[in-house]
Length: 396
Ligand code: HEM
Image (tube, rainbow, N blue to C red; front, side, top):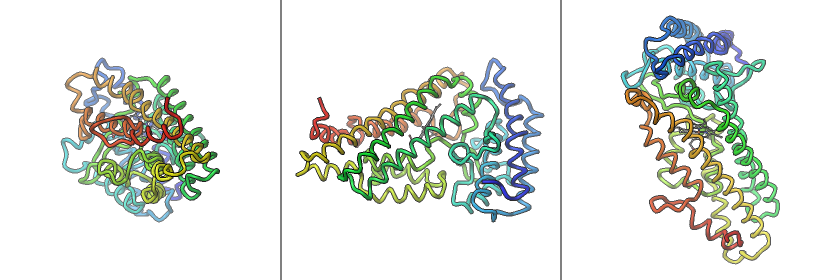
C-alpha cells in the first residue's frame, strides 16, 4: 500500500506532516475565538501557505501524469488531493454556494483524472480516512492532529469494520440457505459484530467532545466542487456493508425508489470492490423473505424456529445500532450544537448540503426502516417481523 511514485510519496508525506500542522494551527485560532464558527479573515498567512504548498505537489503530479502505479498508489493520490480540497473548503478558500466551478483547476484536474481512472467520485471518501487509511509507522492520514479527530476516525473505522464483519457473516448464509442448520454460527457471528458496533458507538458517544467535533472536525466533511460539479461530503456510510445488512435482512429493498436512489447516489463514493459487493447483494432474495416463504408448512420445524429466532435477534441488534446512530450520535453531535449556533452561521452550516431538517428527516427514515418501526407513511417490515415473532413464540 505504498505510493510508488516519488512525487506521490512526497504529497503523501506532506499531508501527514505540514498539512496537518497548518490545519491544526488554524483550528486553534478559530476555536480560541468567542465566535468559534468564524473562519474568514483568520490566520490568512497559514491559509496561503497551505494553499500554495499543496498546489506545488498537485502541479508536480499533474506534470507526471501518471496513474499507472496501480490501485493503491492512485487511491492514495485521490485521498491526498481530496483532503487538500476538503481543507480549502473548510477554511472558506472555496465555497460551492458562491462559485460555479472550483477555483482550484489543477487540483480538480488531478482529482478527476485519478477518480475516473479508479471508477470513484473525484473526492476523498470514507475509505481514505477509515478502512483504507494506511498508517505509516502509526501515523494515519487526517486533517489535524487534534485528539478528537483521531478519536472520531478511529472509532468510525472500528464501527465500519464491525458492520463489514456482520455483512460478511450474513452474506455467507445466502449460498447455504436460511434453513441450513449451519446458519446458526453465521447469525451468531453477525450478532457478535453488531454488539461490537454498539459498544464502539457507546464509547464514541461518551468520549468525543461535542464542541471540538462540531467546530473543528465536522467542517472538513462539507461538500465541495471538483471542476464544475459539486460533490457531497464523505460520511461513515460510504461502504457497502451497511446496505448489505439492510438488504440481506430485508429491512430495506433495492426496489424501493427511496432506497434505490440512495444506493445509486453512494455507488461512486465506495471502493470498486464495495461497489461490486453491493451490486451482487441487490440480486439476492432477503433472508426475511426466505423465512416468510418457508413459514407456510414449516413453522413448527425445529430448524425454522431456531433460525428464525436467530434472525430476529440479529434484527433487534441492528435496530439498536440504528437508533443509537440517530438518537444518540446525530442528536448529540450535530442537532444539539446546531441548535445553539448563532443565526448568521446557519446558512454556512448547511451550505450546499441539504438543509439540516431535511438531512435529519432522511436519517430518521433510514432509522425507522432498520427498526422496522410501525409508520403509516413508510413501508417498513414491521408487520412481517410481528408475524415471524408470533410464529416462533418470540412475542409476549
Ligand atoms: C459523532 C459520531 C457520528 C455522527 C455525528 C454521525 C452523523 C452522521 C450524519 C449527519 C450522516 C448523514 C450524512 C449526510 O448525508 O450528509 C451520517 C451517515 C452515516 N453514518 Fe454516521 N455519524 C457518526 C458516527 C458514525 C459511526 C461510528 C458509524 C458506523 C459505525 C456511522 C455510520 C453511518 C452510516 C452508515 C451513514 C449513512 C447513512 C446510513 O446508511 O445510515 N456513523 N452520520
